[in-house]
Structures are given as C-alpha cells and as structure tokens.
Image 1: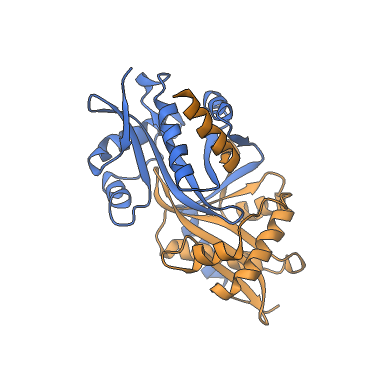
Image 2: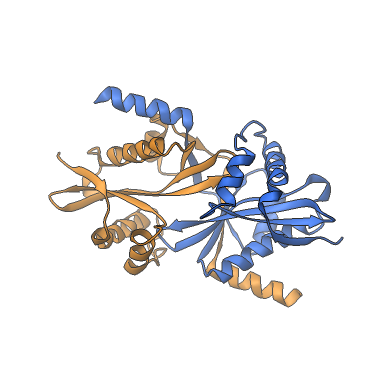
Length: 163
Length: 163
C-alpha cells in the first residue's frame, strides 16, 4: 500500500472534520463534536495556530490524521499533546496510524520536548497494546475531570448568588 | 482568614516552583519535577506565555496557586486546562483552593471556552468530591498515555534502525 504523509493545509479541513466525527462515533460520543469547519480553519491555519495537523493521503484521498499542540507541564516543561490519531475505518491495519504516530514522535524529538502525552479509552485494547509496544507508558491511576459549558454557567451563577 | 488572589508575576517564580514541588511530593512523585526557575520565567512570563498563573497570598506570603493554559479539543474547540491547583499544606481547608478554582472558572467563562479540564489521581477523594460538588464531571474510563524523553529517544532509534 502506498500512502504519503504531509502537514495538513486549510483545504484539508472538511476531510479533517469528517475524521474527527468518525473518531467520535468510534469513541461512542457521536454527538460530542460541536466544532465547525470555520473554527478549525481559524484555530489551526491562521496566525499563531492552536494546533498542527499531519495527514496521510493516497491518490488525493485523506486516509488518516494526527493532530497535536503544545502544552506545559509544571514537572517537565513544554510537552506535545497528541489530541487525535485517526485512520479511516476501511484503511486500518495498513501502517497508516503507525506512520502518523512516528511523524509526531519525530516532530517531538526535533522540538526537544520532554514528553508526548495523550489519552486512550480503557476499552481500546488495540490502541493500548500499540502504545505500550512503542515504549509509551499507559497510566491507569488518573481520572480526567471536566467542567463543561453548562456546568461552568451553573457554577458561576451559584458563586454570584453566594456573594 | 484574609487572603487575596491575583495574577502571578515573574518575581513569584521561586514560590511557584516550591508549590509545584510540594504537589509532586503529595502526588508521590517527588523526583518528577525537572523544570527550573529559568524555564518557568521564560515560558510563563515572556512574550507569548505558555501558561497563566494565579496566586493566593497573605501578608506577602504565597499560599496557593492555579496554573492554566489553553488547549484545543477537536470536539469542542478551545478549552482551558487546569494544570495545577495547589495550596500549601498548612493552609488547606480555609477556602484558598476554592477561591483559586473559582478564579479559573471565571476566567474560562470570560474567555468563552466550552470546557475546562484537568486530571486528578484516583485516590485523591477529597479533590474528587470537591470537583463533583462544583458540577464538574470526573471521567473514569480514560487512561493517560505518555512517551517520556527516554522512550522518545529509544523509539526514534528503533524507527531509524528499521528504515
């Protein structure tokens, strides 16, 4: 199978959003994607982009993507966060995910960050096996905490009510 | 107890690093902190800072801090990550953590992000209870994955050996 990898451009945004939606379905959260093409265009491909995206393509078709951005760890300094690593369902198992993953690790090494980090669902054993095989650590003693938009509104209202 | 909160300045860095080290001890990773004062100064208080830090103080003494930065979710767009929320051991239980947490949520609401997120250790029940009481969701079905500096080096070497 012949595919190539490259950095995404703004014209890839529709396909990127399709892949994001495909991952959300796979992760059993089909309605969680509220981001729009316009937001992806403005956030990722303007001045001071909020993320960088690599894509894999074959004959002009985007088959997969890896989306990253910098974070800051107060323990180790600047890190890279791998937000999404997605391969189209019909093209899995062909090395596309590995190639994109290796591209991210290469980029991280060039940027001299002390860590690359990401999250994985506890039932996604294929992914966990792959990550561990590459030398990554999968930590099982941390929970993710989130305050969503609605929760934020309610919290602020409660706070104001208390003052 | 009277304390005030404000945005941190570069002269707070030594105290910020002390707090970071105190949290690492609490989280049973006392040797995990390799970040230096210089890195914190350059990353947080220069041009295009990588994070923003709020501190609580009383009579010139820093008693706690909350450190945040922006991330990008491919599901909901720009988010705020709460990297650290720390209160000095001798001053816990006095509302300092709550005040800093509220400051972060206020900031997030002003910035109109759709989510604030952070991580918490599974045994830190006090923190989990507090977060849930404020309306945050604590998700237990995600694992954190990390490729550290050594793993990154080994991975790159293996990759190069394979080509």
